[in-house]
Structures are given as structure tokens and as C-alpha cells.
Amino acid sequence: MNNKKIITIILGFGIVSLFVVYKIYNKPHVNVSDVKSDIIITADKIIDDFSSDEMKANKSYLDKIIKISGVISELKVVKQKGIITLKTNHDFGSVLCHLSDKASRKMNSLKEEQTITLKGICTGFLLDVILVKCEIIN
Amino acid sequence: MKIIHTILMCFLFVNVSNSQERFLTKNGAITFFSSTIMADIKADNNQVLSIIDASNGKMAISILMKSFMFKKALMQEHFNENYVESDLFPKATFKGEILNFETLKDLETKLEVKGLITIHGKRKEIIIPASFTRSENTIFVKGEFNLLLSDYNIKIPNVVAKKISKEIKVSFEFNHKPYKK
Image (cartoon, rainbow over all chains, first blue to last red; front, side, top):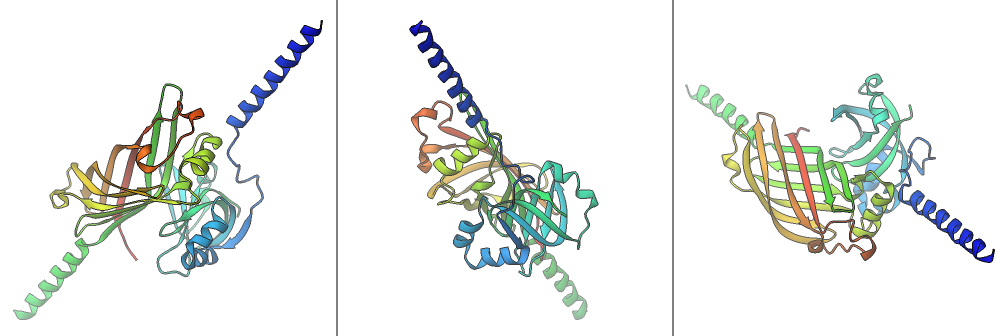
């Protein structure tokens, strides 16, 4: 009787921990559209911050969910994925927003020179500030 | 006659300076694979910056480590936090020269790119074979090569050592366009 109890407890424990490990291993990616944005900013401000002090900007923006607004300067589709370039007041750098699969399908409704708000994850600064997994807010 | 000559020279000069243009892509693709009996791991980065100076065959590439997208969120987290430490080393770079660049015509040509690659703060000299195709307004580059994690001081903990290959296959595809602005 006592033995049975112990075995049941151990088994139960084992099943629960297996389940937890499985859940952690398969934890989903952040769903940008469901999560509240960490930072709300304009295209001009974010490029200013990155070009004046990249190290500092990396600390404040990388991996963050950013809601960004600006004017579209270029719309492009590469490998079925939409890329929106936002204008800035800098000569070279702009903000490149790589759209999610879902948002890429809504590209047709957009026009150049249009003001737009997007939400995405910042991965860093090369010539431009780069945001990935972007969703179109409006 | 002299005027015509001058005008002709002007045109020539304009053409020459045009052909010295820089070619660039802001959405180059790099994919890496690690393949072991236990697991296949793959990550894509479609935000690679690559620049070719067509006047001398110099090539420069910048890669954001956080732009590598994995299928599993946990793997992406481990990659960034534990293996390449992308908060400390947010970029990988390559600077080098395309050997025999002047032989490149519009046909697909196999060339080698020689230069310095920096990953995880470790710099190493490398020669990468790649196939190049040049047309009037594109330089298309494609290829693959292998990297040893130990060369870049990337340590994999014993627990997962069987799931991650010590040698990583990297493939790349850049479609450079003339740089305007």
C-alpha cells in the first residue's frame, strides 16, 4: 500500500516535470501584435539616438517592442516579405521595417509618402535602424 | 573639333565615374545550419548589409546577431545570451577583397573573397569561395562555407553539446544594386 503511494507520487512528479521541460523547450516567439509596446518613438528620434551614441541606443532599444511612426519613403517586397523604409532627417540612415508574413499581405494598401505607425522588434543599427517582425498599426 | 572632343571626354568621364559606383544590399540573406544526429538547427538573417566597391573589388559585410531568426524561441534566446553574447558583440563583420574581381563578366564566375571575419569579438583571416554574376545594375553573390565554433571562442555547454555541431555551415546570398543618394 505504502509502496504504491510512493510510486504514484514519483510518477506524477515525473510527468509534471516532463511537461514543464516540454513547454519551456517549445515556448513560442513573442507575438508582436499581442504584446504592449515598450517604447513609442518617431523614425527621426530613433535614428538620432543610434547615430549619436550607438552603444547607448543598443542598450535602450535592442530586443524591445517598438511602436514607430514615420513617412514611407520606399515599399519593397523581397522573397514575399515586405520591407518598409521610413524617412528620416538624416542624409543616409533611415529606418527599415521588415514586416511579418501577415503584415506583408497587407502591403498593397500602402502608398509611398503616407504616414504610418508600425510595431516591431529592434535588432540594431547598420546603415539604418532595423526592426523585424513588424505589424502595421495604422 | 576641340569642343566635340571636350564633350566626348566629358561623357567618357561621366561613364567612368558611373562604373566606379558602389553596389550595396541592405537585405542580404545569411543562413546557418548545424546538423547532428540529435538535432538540425537553422537560423535565417535577411537584414545583412553588404557593400562592394566595383572600382577595386573591395567588399564589406555587416551582420546584426539579433537578426538571426530561429524556429524555436528558446534556441534563439540561448544563441543570443549564451553562445554569441550579442549584447556584448551585437555585430559580426567581414572586410576583404574579391580576388581577380576584374575578370568578372556577366557570366556566373567562381571567385574567392579574402579578408578578415569578426564574430563574437574574435577576428580571423578567411578565404571564402563564392559565385558572382554581374549585370548592368546588379552584382549577385552566392556561396557557402564552414565555420568552427572553437575559432571564435564560442563555447557550447556539455548538456547540449550533442545537439550542436562544432562546425557550422553558413550560406549567403546578396543581390547588390548600385548605391544611389
